Structure formats: C-alpha cells, structure tokens
Length: 97
Figure 1 (tube, rainbow, N blue to C red):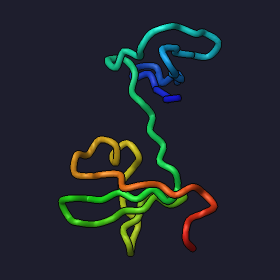
Figure 2: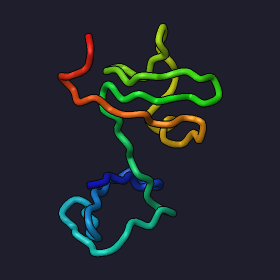
Figure 3: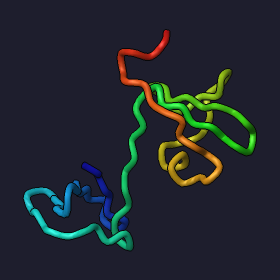
Figure 4: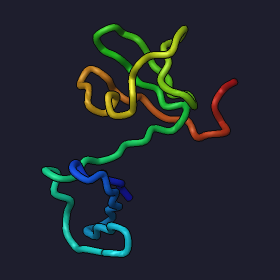
C-alpha cells in the first residue's frame, strides 16, 4: 500500500491495487500525480549512498546522519535526489547498537 498527499489541500490518500481511499470514500483508478505526491517513509536503519561525495547516510529516529554528524536531509530530499541511492533497510529492533 502506498500513501499520497494532495498537493493543494494536504489531505492524504491510500492506494492499493487500483483502489484509492480518501477518508471513507473508495475510488477505482490510479492517482493523478498532477495533484497527488507519494509520501515515502524510510525505516530507522535505512542506509543511503551519496555518489557525489561517496558518503553513506543512515536514518535514525531524529533524522539522517553522516558517520559523524546529523545532516539536513529529509525523507523527501532522499527520494528526489538522483545522486542518492537507497542501499537497504534494517528492521527496527535488529539494528546494531
């Protein structure tokens, strides 16, 4: 299932297998990306590679981190930058301490 946010009014919609649901309304079809943008959530432990700087970033509870410091990256930025590649995720509760 994917989650989308309306670009104008901020309402949220879920989508799965040709069905969209906004509150109690269910509609058959595909989201029109002129009006809806997908909300991407990365789980804690997700690793991302920056090909411009050859740096690995890790998602923690309060944001994205380089090996030594917090960055200003957001989930939206991670998903939209072509030089950032998601390497993999770790299920919560299994990440190394």
